[in-house]
Length: 312
Image (cartoon, rainbow, N blue to C red; front, side):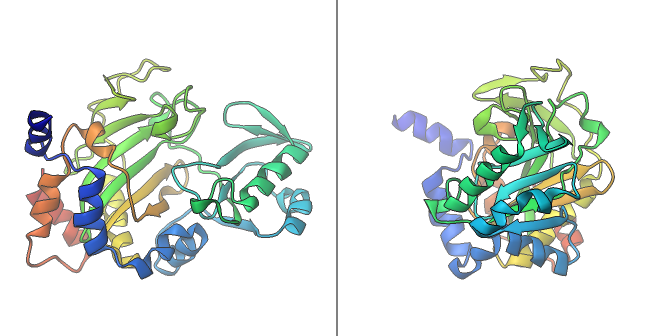
């Protein structure tokens, strides 16, 4: 056990307890957490700061709004319904098209209007919220994946997680939907985590569960050695999000829309540690390097340049 623990330390692996004690508690003021836990609040704040996000169509806050949901959804043939205070991608319903009063999910499954209402009602009850407290449902623009991902993603939209510390991007991974994940970029449901070189935006091997893979299991296409588009823009957006919410250790989730380009999807004040599996490298090395820096540039672009010059 001692040998195993020593090996983890030597590889710079950060565990949950260390993450909480050394990086979240000292660097993330608790009073700023609502800015990221409340997705609607995050979205409105991003708009104020000229950070591109998926358009907000409507919110459903009370059961009376659920009964009027059919009228609310009439203008939209595709959309996303998600819990305002959800986490880990739980409770997200992606509708890709509609046939009359019926809706098609990304997986092809058909839902009736009544089923969508029940789903939304479950969100309001707190079924998917942090702590199980009553919640609000957000209805927003459905991102359509950039053609770059057509060969390496199954149905859904891949997203990019960037870990940002003191405003400096320190690690990143690409999350690719699979058949097992029902087209969602959720690692716990079977999506693939692919490490990304933060200097170049080039992908590395991926991890599915605990197994390393270099191909997508459904498309059988290589997932390593690919140059992600818009990489400098993605890094800059992530760096700007840190200063926007006043948190020094965050996870920034972004997507690349086929028409709108990079969009910030949501922020996380307690980002998971799976990025270490995806990149094959512990977070601690880069975290310590940034922690020891006396002067962090003010401009996001300069912080990105710093990451490219100093980090691994």
